Amino acid sequence: MTSDMVVSRPRQYSSAIAPQHAFQKEHASAASPQVQEAFHPSNGGAAVGYHSAKYTPMEWHSNNYAIIQQAASDSAAAERIQRLSKSICKKTEADAQNRQSEGTRHLGGRLQEIHLLKSELQGHIEKLLAETDLLLLLKTRLEKALDATEIPYGIATDNFTCRERRLGPELVKDAVEDELLKEIDLIRNIQALLKRTINQVVCQIKINREAKMTLELDWSDKCHAYGIDDQCGRYSIMSRNTQHHPSSATMQDQVSEPTSWLKFSQDNLTRAAQEEHTTMDLRVLVERLLQDTTEDLRLQCAAVDQAFNQRCSDLAEAKTLLELQLSQILDQIGAQERNIVALQQAILDKDAPQRVAQSRLCLRSHRPNMELCRDDPQLSLVEEVGQLDAMLSSLQQQLAEARGSLAHLEESRTALEKAIACKTHSLLVDKDKCMPHRRRYPTVVTLSGY
Image (cartoon, rainbow, N blue to C red; front, side):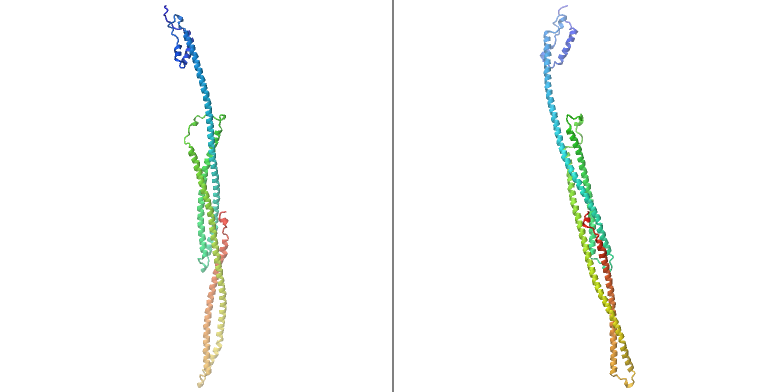
């Protein structure tokens, strides 16, 4: 066997070197190219015999050098990684704390915004509630005022109906009737106006309640959001009730923006403010309406009462004049009756002288022959009879005139008595029935709805 013969390396040696070789392969990328060349063992071609598979001293030194270099490199890399890790840990911890502080600060600012809006919402809710309560009181007053107008309407219509029962010529369209018709029309118009106002107040109350409900819903949502953000602001690294929510950072669908969020509340507040101003204006209008209607009713009532007083005064005066005239007519009737009796007696008194004169003439007409003379006695008797006939004719005519006058006086008395009876009945209707009924007219406080 020659010295140039090549044999393979024993397995027991190669297995002892293999782990080191594997370690070198793992760190080959970190070693220099010169080290990599020096690391490869000899193929044993120059060795002679069985012992030619051993490493050379150069390889041994190279291997040691590579191990030392690799260890130093790994140590330096580890130190660098440690320094970088410490720096990153400090930075991330500081960033996390800053982020958490910033998040807490933003949550605090958000809590202030929510608190301000919640306070404004609560203030407007209270204002709307107060305005609605005042409107409810005004609605009650309007309803009471509307009910109170039924009494004046009943009084006016009853007065008008009663005065329709006046007798004869007393059924006249006077100032009282004109004022009563005005009062009836005024009450009807006021009732229609009060009904329209009540409907308007009811509609405004409904609108106020809807606006209040909208504010309450917004206020409730903000209270809920305030509680959530307040709880979020209290979370810290020491909190035990925190846990991982990997999908929580995903933006939810249909979320609002800060501008839309603020605009929503501002729109609600603007609408509430508008309804508050509308309610205040409506309250002022209703107060003025109640005051004006009450004043109009009382003024018209005073006008009707004044017309009644004037009419009763005119009736009393006319009745007094009629009674005075009736008294004079009665006196005239008595005097005329006595005059008729006197005339009748005068006519009876002329009967005897007439019979005497006519008897004388009749008897003297029987004188014989030449004794039938138209002497002075005859002429005197003829004249006497003529005078007596003229006297009787005059007395008869005067008696007829006296009886005619008495008949006219009786007619006048009847007319006066009827007129006095009509005036008395009219006074009974106006003064004893209508005017006492008008004392039940509601007061200003009642007509105002209190």
